Amino acid sequence: MEIPDETEVGWYRLGAGPGEPGATVLAGHVSWNRTDGPFRELDRLELGATVDLALADGSTRSYRVVERAQYPKLQLPAERIWTSTGPETLVSITCGGAFNPEIRRYFDNIVVYAVPAT
Image 1 (cartoon, rainbow, N blue to C red):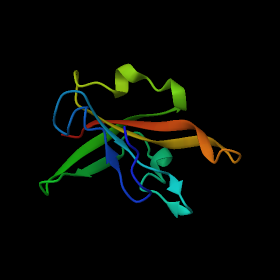
Image 2 (image 1 turned 135 degrees about the vertical axis):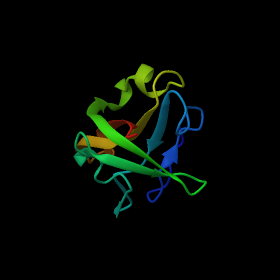
Image 3 (image 1 turned 90 degrees about the vertical axis):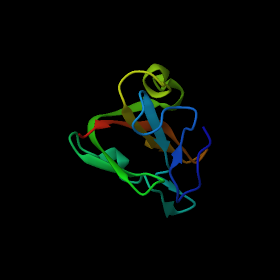
């Protein structure tokens, strides 16, 4: 998955799309180049919060947050994230946890799982 620049959210195009079975995976920065990223507050989303996803056709799809997790970067649960089968899920990923100033990277990823709100 190619990570977008600091102002955009990227979509894993080989996964599911909104409204399809499996995981619609989005990724965005917390911050980059001294600029807050679109997922700056992702680690603060509470269970039950509503996430509205604007689609290319101008419509909006609503999801309800059901889980927020933190994983070491190399230990993301592939079977939950990179799937195109099973229930529709919105998976949002960003960096989090402790920051390593030597390599200018976070050690972990924050992952928020959401299901259709309807």
